[in-house]
Length: 390
Image (cartoon, rainbow, N blue to C red):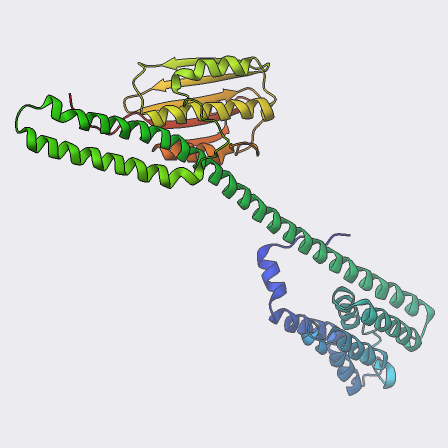
């Protein structure tokens, strides 16, 4: 049996220390209703003991959470001794006992709740005046106990689910961090090749400068020599900084570029997926890192389509704009979630890859609302201006 779900406001009210005081006050008023509003047949006022018993059987509920078993025993004792005096309103004082019994069953350990429950049942049966009343009281006691145990089971299950959700969230964050770390390492290796090539060219051009300059050769030689030395030093520092990220056993292939996308689509089509590649606009030169990023983003998007989407067809769309290259990879599969499936580089890697060259990448349902999934990326085309010695 599951407890009914509570709204956040009701849950806060139930957890408030004033909730027990309110419960005790309401129960006291309910148990005194007959004494306050019902008159005896003889016209005589009810005996004062009835008011004391009604208060004693309900007011201890104000500390039920702190001492459930003693509260139940006190409430049950006053309820059983209600008929000691006369005249009294003909009513059983069950409300406080049932609430306290529910509290004991839901919070106390077996070695406490079972003996207390049996003692309360025995005392209740011994104090009633008729078999019908005894039967009704026993049924109510058992029902209150069962509801208390169901409430305890629901709380235990909720605690387990909460702990499991927290553990899964921690594992998910760790997986995301590891994925981001792997992709950053991969990006760093790619950037090493890109920057190493650029700096090598800078060194060569700087060393060739004194040969082509005729005016003030001594000053030009000194300036270009400083450029060459700075370039060599920067190249050495870059290699040392990224050496830890490179796997010695990992052979380095030439970096792919955006011009390798047709070959990539043909390779994926060989795996049974119908893939097309279309372009819109006038192609322009792209920075090396953006070209690598474009290839990797399309590669991972198509890999996810093959592995997870269950699609029959995918399309790679390139749109050349003034300053950016827009990439869209759409499929007709069954995937409709907001994130890429787990595994591989995933959405984390796509974002890292695009951000590394100043772009953005997102993934989600198709914009045209057709079945399938879509990966979108915007990569900048403008590269930093570099002065070259002619």
